[in-house]
Image (cartoon, rainbow, N blue to C red; front, side, top):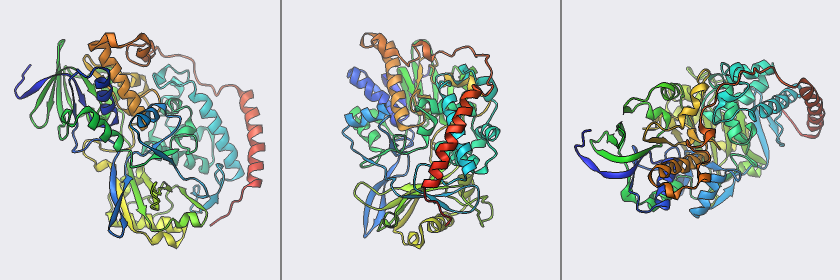
Length: 531
């Protein structure tokens, strides 16, 4: 192996300075401070898909807001344990008040409960579908989705195709399509139905992905989410976290690994943690080359397309009017050439813990791709028009409009996550399995809370355990190997040949009768009006 300009021998080189890579390095140093660890980050900052920036809040002042990943939840044990360890405080996401919905048509409706303002038929079909996918998701493990009894039947279906098999309501189709756009940055017609079920399983249920209370959008971090990575980098030692070091090639043999960067440096190590997103790994060269199942999954797991915007206000007028700040929308009709719909998919209240009023929202999936072709001014005008349409003219009296187009972020290329497409789930377990001396981390490789910050934390801890098992086996107990590549559950299992047939008709008949009664009662009790 060539060693020109080699930067010394390391025990471990970590590729990627996001949450996953930094957690792996941090845990390695915690377990054995004598281990030499270098983190190579391609960007000029740490944090990966978290990004906290100071935004204009008026009067010459600025305050930190998250333009990347920002939410955590009490049920996300890995990230909650870490932020407690790092002494980071949280505060709840505001959800109280009237919510807006524009689905099924251009009409804007309001609702106050957790039940959306759909027709009675739509509510019944939506609840039936939710119960069905929740029940099915329990049988689709993220460790190996193809081991599910539904694998052969569902693997070729997109989420939209699956939904349309079970409902003819446009409202229901659009509710779940918007949910997919925000969770994955992709329309439901692009995502594998089997992958959605596995993804929901990893978070304790499908609705845990989309709801706020007792779910994934429950809490925010005081000071922003990027500080997780910044604090970890400080504790690892800034001299061990090298920015602007994009990895170009990795060469390995039976004894060592050489990591070559674009700026001409070579790092020699015993083991490597690959914590770059799969779409970025696919741009790197490997000797010997990655082949087989890993190649299939890297070439067929696209990253979502998401634009995040934050509008800063002087006054939280929506709260004064009894609104929560939430909008769920199909985008409505767009009058701009090249844009099929308006920009907005969802919005939430984004008021900071210091009390600075703000609204956060997302342009997601196809809409994001289309609107990215427009100027920032055109996007701003369209977003503000939509906000005013829902919240009233007060929405136009704002301090600043701020946005982040994640498709344009160097060495990321999209957001929020990579997602599975039909026909590839048989290779999915290989996403997290080692390739000789290279171990893999990143939220897409997590087996709990996949796709979230907590999933990144879990994957980093797992990768560190796998490294220690090889370098310092005396530090690892048998129980520590649970969930690693050295535990049976991580090994791909043979495909179960049982086919999906809709399952337990009597269960669904009883469920439908119960949900009809519940929905009719809720529909009578709740207030709903056309704006």
